[in-house]
Length: 70
Image (spheres, rainbow, N blue to C red):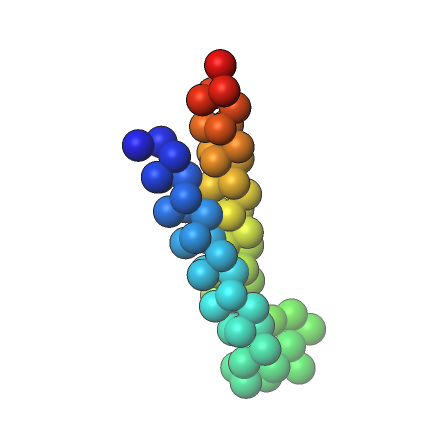
């Protein structure tokens, strides 16, 4: 069960990071970058949360594999 949850978190994180990367390159993000020097908050939140979810999911996968070896 723990391994399935970890895989789901990892996949969701990758999907969210991809959407965040696409949002960073969007028109609204370009306009925001022109005026403020930074992309939109929503795109950065999606990108960062996607990376965090991927790392948590990957850590869960690695930990569950190490536990099954014993």
